[in-house]
Image (cartoon, rainbow over all chains, first blue to last red; front, side):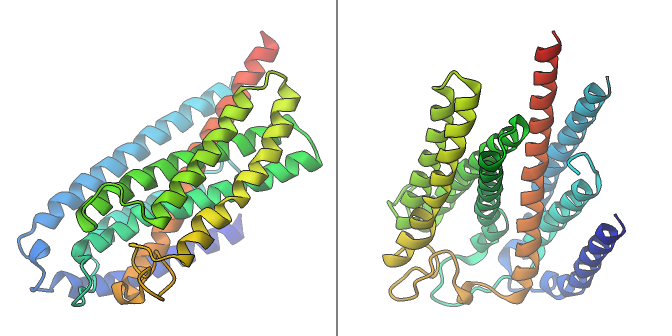
Length: 70
Length: 227
């Protein structure tokens, strides 16, 4: 379990380092989609869908765990 | 292992990261490459196929394990991994078709890789048909496991060899480029650090769904044997 935690931590660290690069990407003025801000609409729709799916899965997981304990 | 929460959390974190960065990351728009911003599909369409391949491979491993040491549990694992693999494959085909309509002008262009992927999926559909047609539980598992091995090795010609032998509409498939699916010109390192987390995240999500189905199957059988 300890080893797994270390692997997870490595992943998260790797992700964090990426956000520095996100800054100059967002500042790219030549980008039509981003310049008019519409890309954020798509982004929020996708995030809501994926979040919803995860909530649904977590619920399902809990229900099955409950059944297993019976 | 299948009930532990840590890898489910990793799946969630990775996919949230992908869904945010997938839209923010800087993508190259070199002249002569028509993809433009639709290259962002790389974070959603392509991981479906990677996920499918990983799941089919896992299914194959359990099929071989079953043949070496027959147990009902191993067969359930093999079956459910193949099932989620097919779901991801179908999602890959549909999303690919949408993307193809935008880039190649038709929902279905008979591209070598499109046809190959469809054939590969049909081979796996046949796996379920075969299992469904057998009544005896043990026969179902054994013949299913043997067919599973065959179906997996059909992925080699249909997905990995034949599309490389002919020209493909997929990026990197023109002329002698020879690797439909990847073209270094369309990609940069910023995209790679979103793409690989996307592959891991979507695959973990698929594994999660699979483990839920496996657990449900085990519960169902327990109930049947008790009542």
